[in-house]
Structures are given as C-alpha cells and as structure tokens.
Image (cartoon, rainbow, N blue to C red; front, side, top):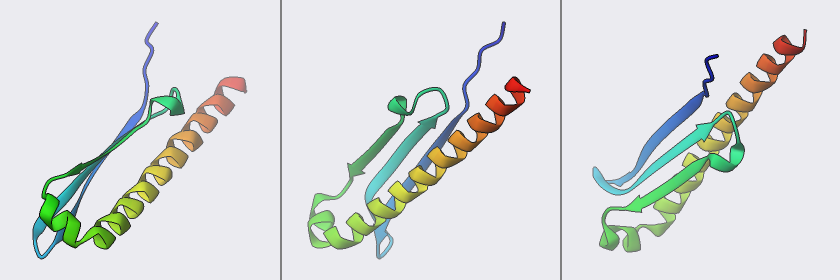
Length: 86
C-alpha cells in the first residue's frame, strides 16, 4: 500500500540595497506539525547588525508565510479526512 506525505518548502531572503543579509527556509508537513522546520541564516553579520529592524520584519513576514502554509496543509488534510469518512 502506498503511503505518502504532502509538504510545502518555502525559501526567502532579506535584502537591503541588493545585498542579502539573511536567508530563510521552512518545511511544512501534513503528517505531524511537530516536524515542521523554520531556519534563519545570517549571511552578513555587519549588515545584520546595521539593519536588524528590517531583518526582523522580514523574519516575521516569512513566519506569516509559514503559518499560511500550515493552514493550507491542515485544510487539505481536513478535506482528505472528510472524503475518507464519507
């Protein structure tokens, strides 16, 4: 029997004046919310220190995208469960 999982991978970056300060990655899985991951990688410490407010806002914006993906996965799982129970 085939078993599968659905996942969403998100990537993003925080830039100022065309320079990348931080990269973001996230993976959202349908099988267990505890397996979701969210990572931030600071690529330029000097620029980060000078632009913390920008990076923190970008981090929050990216986190909101992760929440949206979690909601999408949960909604998809709910619809699948409803079809299974019919």
